[in-house]
Image (cartoon, rainbow, N blue to C red):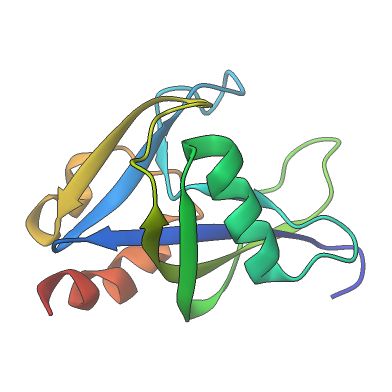
Length: 135
């Protein structure tokens, strides 16, 4: 996948609820919801990036558990490289999530997953996440 930016997302699950994060920026995404995470740096493993991003964005330490779904392409963005989103279920190891880089956070139960305005790349993962909230 040379030339494609890998972005990782964490489906952080606690007590049957998924943590959703409301974007603060960029302007076209402000107010929409996503799974916390971010870009994988060169030479960094996907799971290392996931742990780093959750520490930076939420102030927590997570443990990636299992990759879910397939890579999902981001919509084309002018001037940005092609990118795909990869998602892992994750558990909280230490800390309580706070919105260090987001407008707000919400814990969503299975029946409320579609109550927020998700970013397009995150939507395909909701069906894969739902069973983890019900078990």
